[in-house]
Length: 109
Picture 1 (spheres, rainbow, N blue to C red):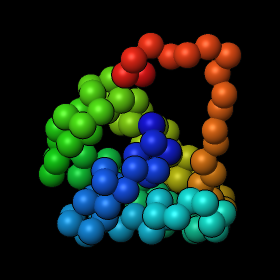
Picture 2: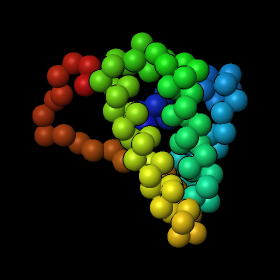
Picture 3: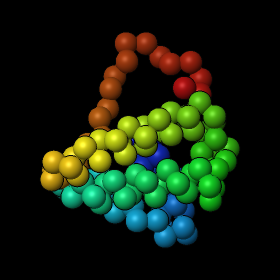
Picture 4: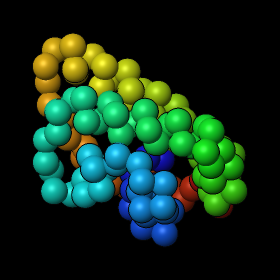
């Protein structure tokens, strides 16, 4: 879900431009750039916080409550990963993966 959000400029850019969130690690994942774990952690926490408090219905209004819940879970996992990577002094990069399914998904999933 995070990859879908990042791939849709009409959804992602208001979070970065209008809310001024520190989302540099999420802005161009296709560049395969490594970021300090602290930067990825900060971006994930800022995005999660904004989606919970500042614009709580932003994703569910545009993509549905199921995708909003999925994004919340993914951000929680990314925060956990960022904390563990930071403790190890690691750097992280985001990779967008495309998966081809053997059958079509039902509408809105």
